[in-house]
Image (tube, rainbow, N blue to C red; front, side):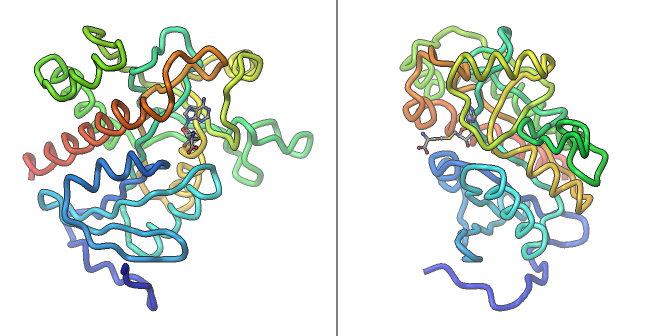
Length: 273
Ligand code: SAH
């Protein structure tokens, strides 16, 4: 049974020169693939189980945020307040909003926006009331680290039999995974019709992908001044013609590949310490 919190976290996981890194995922398959790679201790706070570990010397707390902006935002606050997280990284899947962004590609967020925020005419559409912000920028250094890890994994796919097998299974063999960096949108809607995705593309043509959590986490991190970075593996085209089975894609491709990227990210850090 996970322990329950009775007191505020005192930050024992962290020491002065190694920040506590929080790893967030929205779906169980994604978290499970990360947890398989470390020996973590569960701690229960509210209705979430937070998994604490030292991963190659890096203090980490991994957690399932669940799906949607509120679930992700409360989880992010708890990571910062109770667990003393000083950096947050989110991995997951998303729908593509750009013809150049294919299923199986990776999108690294440089900016995030809540596409369903609209308090107009009191505030401009998309602006988070009383912040004067509609776009949240991810942390440059963390994003660079994620990008290097993703590039490494992209190159390894050809030589890694296990990963190659997953790709074959989905008919993506010999496909070079595209890596993109740009704007990701979040909102409390699963975008699964051409009508909805076309409307989003028309209003926000610079957006590369759409999902349901990261812009909310970015807002929390902005409130606390905590560095944040995120990447998403494209699971669908955010329309009614997605040709892949969503659950199967997550289990066989997105979750293992996402965990592989996180592992490379941690390993690179361990190498440079
Ligand atoms: N079938 C799943 C539902 C997943 S909801 C279940 O029953 O559990 C979709 C998750 O994937 C969210 O975490 C969201 O961030 C992401 N996502 C993937 N494609 C998306 C899309 N087209 N629109 C919105 N979110 C998407």
